[in-house]
Image (tube, rainbow over all chains, first blue to last red; front, side, top):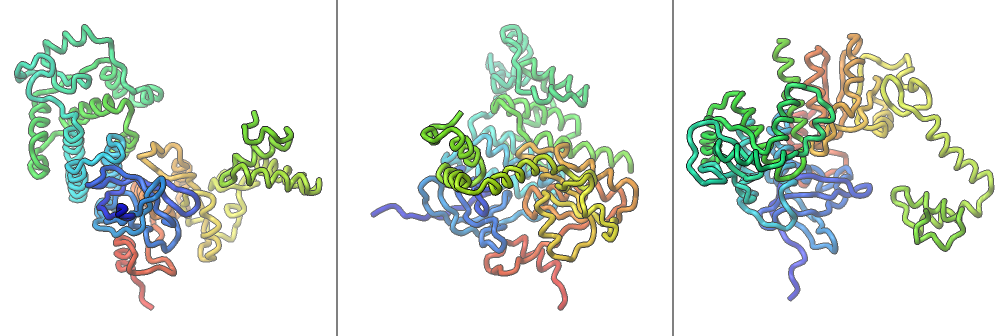
Length: 292
Length: 204
């Protein structure tokens, strides 16, 4: 008997691009097959049965038919459209960032069910708006874990000795924390490692920030405070509910953001595009705050 | 450089066929057919096509007010004194204006953004005509901005961003209603559309 020509799967739609006048190519993440691409025929026509069911940031149940090159989406029923997420500018931008991370880290047809569960859980968490920064950091940390890049936070990644409660260093190339001793050794051995910060260097807007980024990009490791390390350790092994209960000050929050960003940029060897948008969004919000 | 497909043709024929081949939706076979059609057609017809193409690139520019495509410095819609200049309808592309005009229900002016904010593709606000829109709002004569971006993720993000920056200026920001398109099926409508259609239902 020949294998069935159609199959059903849950899917979270990551992105779509136009194909011809009325068709779309969808990229989506599924629990059984990992990331997939398929054609949604006629999705751009007004009154299409697929229409709103195949927009990015939608959790749907899909019926797909095997095609020669790409499979074809024959039916799609929304399970959750995350309407609260989509009605808030900041939340929807966080959602886009999360999807971009998934898209850039995963390969097609690579099943990873825990990662699907994490993605779904994250989108649900983003719907309950309070401090979304924590959710993004938690997501990044666990994304790295499910992909096999779990950072070593409990002992020095080079000499394996237990870490002392002092300012340690996070090394992207070693994938974990370095004790001050190993860090100085590492810095002496290593050529200054240049990240793909070239884009930012091309347009230096915020000088102080720029200098800071350059400092990071020239060194292979960044200092990590004791508090930040504690939070990372806690988040690495807890669930969302516990992670949300942690109160993180803005300074600490930006430190955590920087460390994880550094590691992600190092792994991908490129910037995540929506990061600059999230930064842009944070700026005018602050300005308005000052005006009021 | 002529590609291998056109190499057996005479040089001028191959050159034109190659140019046609670059157009969207036209393959090598189609390109050849168009070329042979022009070869057989009268001189005037070929000249008219060539001139039309040249005029397109030479004469068309962006309206200095609304950034619609036009052959004047200011487009006819912005010049029209009869129109209501206190309302600005913000659209993504110049091609979005004709369908809105066809409805015959809108008498205000337009502003073309030339794209949407698309964080995942790295399209930032600086690449859109947002700053120009804000400067149009400065003199206080505008009372309403109607955001008519497409009802998809990028369009919605752009709409929310515009709302976010324009509302502090004390100008009313509205969004095109979302509902069921004519000829649709309730059974297949997505939750968001159906929900909004219910929220904004109208009395007969």
